[in-house]
Length: 85
Image (tube, rainbow, N blue to C red; front, side, top):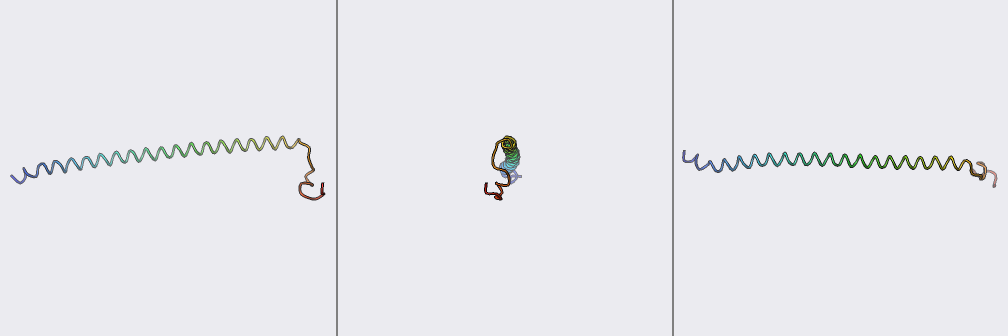
């Protein structure tokens, strides 16, 4: 009985430490999960920006191509290198 009384503070301390460890692990899991979600969000924003830039570049190339079709210049054969224009 006396031995049990001596062990009581130790048991209390061990129980407290185990509960604290569990709480810390839960907090770490929550932080890890939120960090992963944050990274996914940032990756999605990045990909959206890249897609938008690509679309703008494609739109710019298409408008330049449609405008350049009306600009006078050497015939296509001269561009290939056939006639020495």
